[in-house]
Length: 161
Image (cartoon, rainbow, N blue to C red; front, side, top):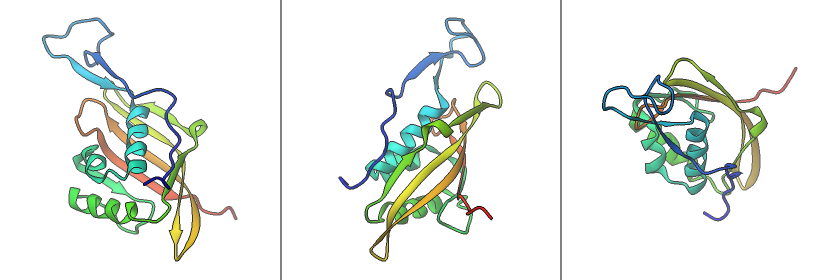
């Protein structure tokens, strides 16, 4: 997998102990949630694509997640369909994924749901030719879930007319 590239995140992913909806250090019963920064979940997803870790990629997707993928004309709405999509994608020769970090935007919907969007670039061989695809993406992340990706949409950026 040494021909795969991903821009490393600026800092390692961190789990921050936190009570949901409460300031750090406050108490809310005995339940402590492990809150992750939403963009770090996307960075982890990209690392796993880089490493071609199909099983670990799939653990990031909620059981009821929906994937509207870059390189398919159908919606992947079951764990099996999401797995088949990534299985085909990860087999691509010279697969590379690069994030355009200045495009990342995180929008909180509430204390646990976030939308993370931006642009990344896919590269891989098609009929022995290295092709580049610019794509925009949106992840809906529930930071309280073990499998935090509940929706992922990615589409090729069309040519301007």
